[in-house]
View 1 (cartoon, one colour):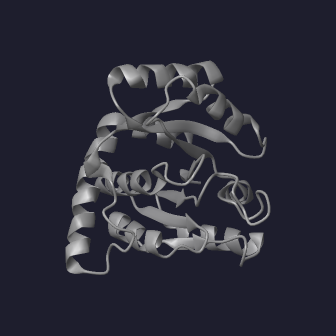
View 2 (cartoon, rainbow, N blue to C red):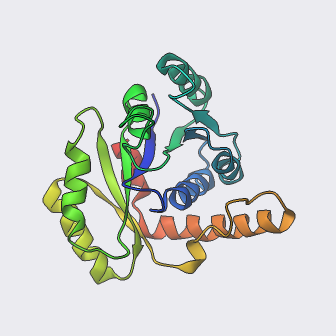
View 3 (tube, rainbow, N blue to C red):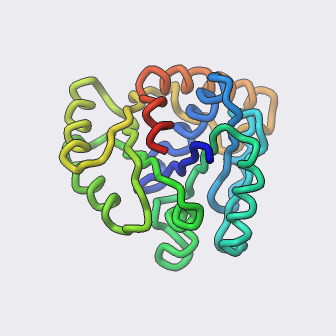
Length: 222
């Protein structure tokens, strides 16, 4: 067994892809063999994963594939890795029929703990009920911890950290609000210029996540 987790969020646009890319590159920089995956039939994000982790990313799709096939894919590609990272699609429980086919269902099928990304751009302690709800909505989904995105200051983060403490969910750190941490285009990797922009983002984001997120604790919890 090796560490593995799924990165999810309450909604699209919370920063899942940026934080996934940052973690993939940071883990690779530590000398770990990282196996990336993507929940759902998304092929742009898998291309970005490959650039970040230097390993082919694999789609795990419970709409077009059976649970057994998804398990087989995960087991096969994770076998030689030190750590596996699955990026979820949309919100944690957004599927083709309620939560069916969602990344939350992928987490349950693979028995993977979830790292929840919470966009804190326009919120502080009000994230507490959101975190509590996601942690308790489905007993089959384990929320291992929270990473906050778009945090304005240390004082802002202190309020967010207190919200985690009061809900009993581990706070793993945050990513600061920064225009440098925005993915320049949804069609990255198609030109040399775009690949250069991605590489700059990867270098910046991986350095930031090493500074502001407790990666050792994240690995330990997952």
